[in-house]
Length: 357
Image 1 (cartoon, helix red, strand yellow):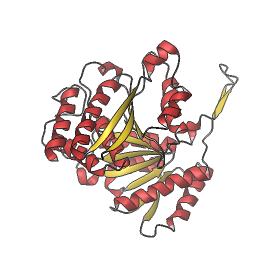
Image 2 (cartoon, rainbow, N blue to C red):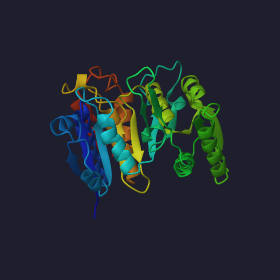
Image 3 (cartoon, one colour):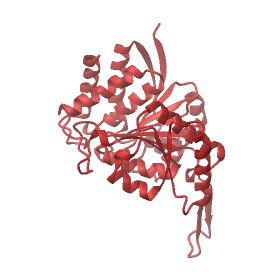
Image 4 (cartoon, one colour):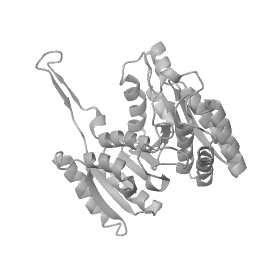
């Protein structure tokens, strides 16, 4: 009997519904050839719903999400909604309520994709960033005093717990072991200035390293890491870092792998419900034009299947993306410059999945 997975689908805003549609198309195709079933449950959470009802994400939805196998997200962000409302009310609420404490971001340059890094090839850009996803500055603890005056004070606290840091670094060690490549884990921090936070991260990493004698443990400051991600990306295997630094350096990593059109991410709860998405935004100026690149979303679907244990299916999706890029079917990852429409790219990858199989 075929395994059945219940997948919550949130198209969201802007180009979100268009790109998620192509991701679902590819997932349906690969499920057919790999003999499992996907049950998609659609949700309309996003800017339009908020503007009509004033509601972002009700608690009842969280309870529904807990019964799913995974969540597949397009994009969140609406030009008529103030920044932070949808991001906090939907994205962060899902991450925090479902305890998705790992944000996983592969940085991988595929053949046929241009990188702005001089003389760097696919073998030079192939690493993963493990970002702590439920603590740090994103906890939202802080406030204003004397707001609107010249004496205003704004306070935002970075919260790092031993439990949160430990489970994040342990996940990173296990991933490094599983990848079995350079066997190097780099802890990225700013311990020379953020001494209390940096000390907790470094001490915890050194404690855990005793259980992984075959893995080399490195430490790097975040500013130096940004430089090396550009100059020597081949140095990295797995990077682990806090919420804020991870948010920043993964966008830099995305550009080195060809841009946001190919960059996918996962919000992982290793023993619960995880959520997968492209890391780009809703790009409202491209919405409804059928010109946005859906590869990041399709790749996120592959990450979702791998997380669910369907590793063959995930590999088929990746091979199909590589074929489309390396053989020149897709001319560019930029919206409107692909040489194909959004839906045509989805059709192509869905077709390749069956041909490669």
